[in-house]
Amino acid sequence: MSDASQVSEPTAVRGGRERDVIDDVARAMTEAPGDAYWARRLFDLVRDPVVATRLRAQIVTAVQRWAAHDPTFFVHERYLSEQLAVWAWPREVLEELDADLELADRSLTHLVMGRLWLEARRPPEDMPDFYGRAARHLREVEPRLQIGAWHEATCEALGVADPADLARRADAILATVAAADRDRALLAILRGAARAGDWRLYDAHRRAFGASEVEGERRNSELVRLDGRRAEQELGVRLPVPSFRRVRPAPDPPASKADAAEDPLEAKTVRPPSRPR
Image (cartoon, rainbow, N blue to C red; front, side, top):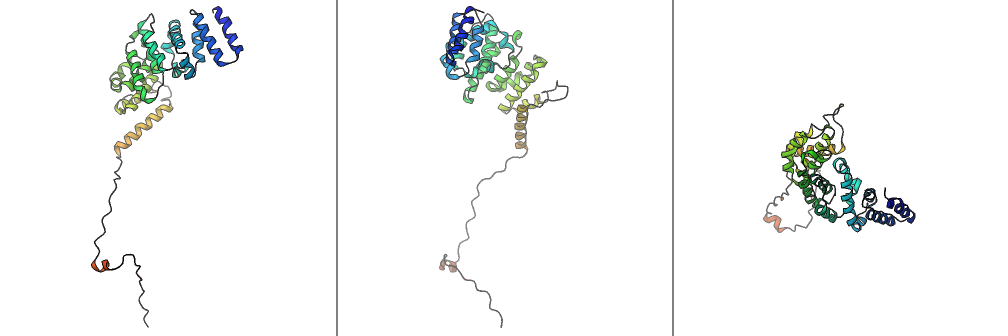
């Protein structure tokens, strides 16, 4: 570890304020470009969108440094968003990385960027753009790096960006996935099929989930929810919802001349028949 790592962090801790700690770590990262520890430390501390916006340039540098130091992290780490707090980053961080990130392995660069765009977690209206960018990067990853989280990430991205392409490529993607990662990729396919309402694709792969389990299919809360959506759709096909269009009441028959002569608001007294004497 560099000399900066031996001095800066204890000083920051004694400062007591969170902002001082983060700023000291960012400063140490700048002063010790050969020490990847500070890049990883910055990810641990920046968990707020406001702070991430303020330290945008430092986050870009940290990603570049950490990806060069430990590229396998981006290949195999499933919970990338939680590890790096990608959900807190402003869009500009990803845009700058898209333009500036250049690793020695171009295919690895596409894998890193594809996973980062996918893990950004934006509102529904922005998902097609973010997932589309992720899908384009992941498509450029060479077969030698189509391991780890690549299969799940590709299925997840296509499920939003291009469901038709997911349906075409699902079998080919699953044919190369490792047994340990197969259910993760399958769940991503099922999720994408449900989003697109492609129940043919859903049914084609539903039974395969959990097939490798010795005790049978595992209970997965998300899968239960997706199965519920599938059942609702099937029920709607079998039992169409009846129409409840408003029906106008039939008009009253025309009044007779005798009734018309009487006051319609006048109450009529009905007397019982006289008792016989």
